[in-house]
Structure formats: structure tokens, C-alpha cells
Amino acid sequence: MIDRRELLGATAALGFVPGQALAASGDLKAIRTAADAGAAASVARIQEWIRHPGIAAENWQMEQSCAFTMDMLRDAGFQTVQKMPTVGQPGIFATLDAGARRTMGIYFMYDVKQVVASEWSSPPFDAALVDKPGWGKVIVGRGAVNQKGPQGAFLGALHAFRAAGKKLPVNLVLVAEGEEEIGSPNFHQVVQAPQVLAALKRCEGIVIPSAWQAKSGAVDINLGAKGMIEVELIASGEAWGKGPKGDIHSSLRAIVDSPSFHLVAALQTLVGPDGNTPAIDGWFDNVRPLTARERQLIALNSKASDDAERLSALGVKQWINGETGTTAAERLASQPTVNIEGLVAGYTGPGGKTVLPGRAVAKLDFRLVPNQTAKEAQAKLRAHLAKRGFGDIEVKVSGGYDPTETAETSRVIRAQQAVYARAGAQATLFPRLAGSWPGATFTAPPVSLPAGQFGLGHGSGAHAPNEYFVVESSNPKVQGLVGSSMGFVDFLYEMAAIS
Image (cartoon, rainbow, N blue to C red; front, top):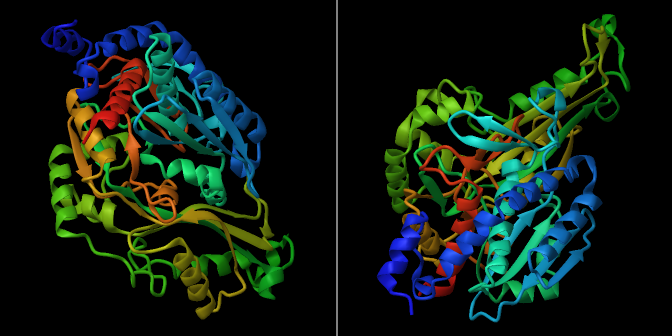
């Protein structure tokens, strides 16, 4: 028999105090020893995953990335790993039966955003290990933090369980997709397949692995996420009936209409005079105002946050309207957005080229808040443009989904609070993630599960050059890869034990 006080002292020295189920077993020390021994293999696993990119927007190496991900799941101990065809890129359905009383759902994505290699300090798919001042040793590569690093940390936890000869305290149901970065247009086909839906119905909830610790070690627990739609607006002389069908000499601009300016005029109607507030007809009709509890959570979160650190990390001098603290945080949580991702028309190479383009394209994303829906947003956008004489502009929707909400009383949220507290990471509740993930696929019927993000550790640069994930932390308040894996170990134990 192991004295409980001795066990608590030993595990506290390792950085964690065990959860209720683990406290009497002595498993944590063995699992931590296994995680430390497997650290190099865990780093190499993430690096190799980054080298199998899978860019859905370009349909590049998708089959290879899917196959590699399935092999990783088998290697981590999942007994069944099944490829799930959709009308787009395939999904993955995997299960791990540990003979446990409870089952936990896990969401993975195996696709990543596009890259412009010339903007990176090292090739984006080389997964270079570099020293990053203030953070420690990091993996630099596309997908490093979004999401292959955190997902790799979760797989590292499963490998540590196996190497230590310990059974998982919960069964696992994992669903993965290859289209998250294009708005998850077909993920519902994976989740609503009969065998997948039946397995998810047995779960206590579902999480996507994350790694969002700030330099202080603090982390947000999001009670939801904004929804989104991603679209292309395409103006062409052919569809408009004005302007050229293809590029022509710019001297003719005196007598020929410009599809590019036609598109710019349409874009200008989507926001108000401040350039920020959505002005699409009826856009705010169903927007739910912040509740009193949400305002309270935002105020508490703002006290624990550092505006200056966040601005510096983003390379931004000020928030909209010079707002700070609670005011800016309320805007972040409550406001739907209209964003131009990119504008393309005519010649964009070196020097000038005097042409009048026959076609112009704008790429946009729209973030949605409760109680907006992706379907409603698409319809209102089309109607708004048509009403203003821009009905000829093609609205090409690549994907999207609704906002998501999870109760703070759910086991998924309370387990996160317990684990973060044991790890010494100050955790504050926030109404919703300003970014998006297809959590509504789980929180809405027919699945109807609580869903969220969880993970210790740090990474940044998602969708940007030099994306990174910390594997050896030089900051004692922030976990590296092994600490991140141990956070998932503790989380699984907590989910097994929590009342």
C-alpha cells in the first residue's frame, strides 16, 4: 500500500497533484516516467505529422495525410480506426475500449491552412526545432499549434499510458476531419453516420486538444465558440453584362465598366461607415445580447488578462476604437464580424501591367454569434447584395457552421477547471472563443453533447508564418510537450471520477 500523503507529495514534485481516481492508485508517477522516456519520440511524431500536411483548400496531399493520421491512431492504441468517406475529403472514426465506466469524445483535424513559403524563417513543412526567446525549444511548421502539436500531445498521453502498463480510465471515441480549414462543409456526414452517432451518444462530452497558456501560465476556458461562413464573392464582366469578359488594355477604362470597382462597391455595403460594424440587412435581427452572467465572466477574465501582452503578440497597436479591458473583451465575445481575407484582380506580379481586369474575387469570412445560423447568414448576404444591384456577383460558399455553447456546469468544463487548478494554471471562464471550430456539430441535435477545448502548453501563429508549438518550455509557468501530455492524462482521470 502507498501512503496517500507520500503519493501526493511525490506527484506534486512532478508538477501535478492527482485527481480523485488517481490519488489512491499511484499510477501518475509511472505514467510521468513513461512520458519523460517517450519525449523524443513524441516530438518526432509531431514533426512527421507536420511533414504530411494535407491542405484541403488546395486538395494537396489529403489522402496521404488521412492515411498517416489513421496510422498514428492505431499506433496510439485505438482498436478500431475507420476511414469515413464524404462527398469531399474523408473523415476518420476511431474507438478505444478500455472497459471503463465512462466514455470521452475527442475531435481531431488533419488538414492545415495554406502557406506562402517565402514568408517563413524555415520551410513550413520541415518542422524545424528552434530556440524561441521567452518560450524555449519549439517546433516551427504549418499545423504546429493548429492542431497537430496539441493533438500530438494527446497521443503522447496515450503512449505513456501504454508504456507504463496502465489502462485508460475512460473509453475514447475519436472523430477527425480533413476539411476544418475550409469550414467543415461535410463533417456532419461523418458525425451522423449511424455507427459514429451511436458511439458519440455514449460520451460524456467532447474536446479538441489545445495549447493556449499565456506567459503567466493562465488559460481561458471557453464556454462556446463563434460560428462562421467562408465565401468568395466573384464579380465578372460576363455575369454583370458590363465590363470585359477577360483582361483588356487599361486605356479603355474611359469607355468600359470595371468589374473590380463593381466588387469594391459591393464590399463597401457590407459594413457601416466605421468599416467595422456589419451592415448587412437583418444581420443583427437574431443576435442574442450578452447575458448578465456572460458580462460577469468577461469582467473577471479581463482582470486576469494583459491587453499589452496580447497586442504585442499580435503586432497590433490598439483595438478598435481604442477600446481596452472589459469593453474590448465584450466586443470580442458578442460581435459578429465581416472580414476580407483577400482581394484578387488582374495582374499582381512585379511592376505594373496596364490592364482592365475582367474578373475580381474577394475572399471573406463572417463570424457568427448566438442565435445566428450559417444558413441564415448565407441567405441574408445574398439578399443584401441583390437588393443593392449586386445580384450578378456570385456568392460561392465553401463551408460554415453555427455558433456553439456549453454549460459551465457540465462535466467537461468542471473537469478542465479541476485540472488547470492542480497544474497551477490560473483559468478563467470566457463566454465564447472568438475563433471557430465545428463544435455545433456536437452540441446541436442529434448529438447534443457538451463540447470545448482543453490543453496545457503553448503555441501561436495559427494561419500565419512561423507557426510554432513549445516542446521544451523555458518558462516554469508554461508546460512543454510532456507537461501538456500529462495534462491530458489528468483530464482523462478527472472525467472518469467527476460527479
